[in-house]
Image (cartoon, rainbow, N blue to C red; front, side, top):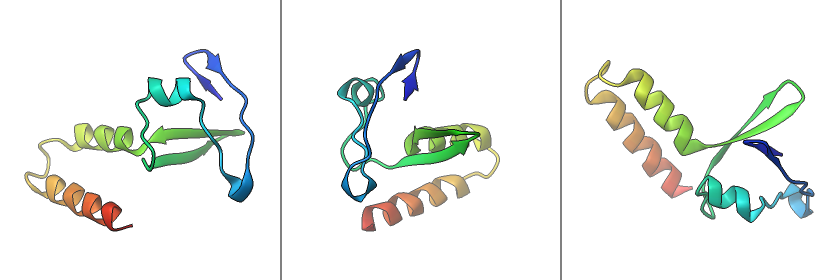
Length: 83
């Protein structure tokens, strides 16, 4: 696992759970229960806080669909809360 030149070794536990080191959780302000996006990039697994992906999408489409994007994100947030 590498972040800004830092690395750490973690093990896959029961039910394939991985515990992120405190330093990484603090640096990225990760909270228990927060959603992460998992992507394969070549031979690597890349974890990204879902909120960061949402911000990138919002920035990309800001102003293109007045009101529609906010409505979509509100629906997604409500859906995530129900899960």
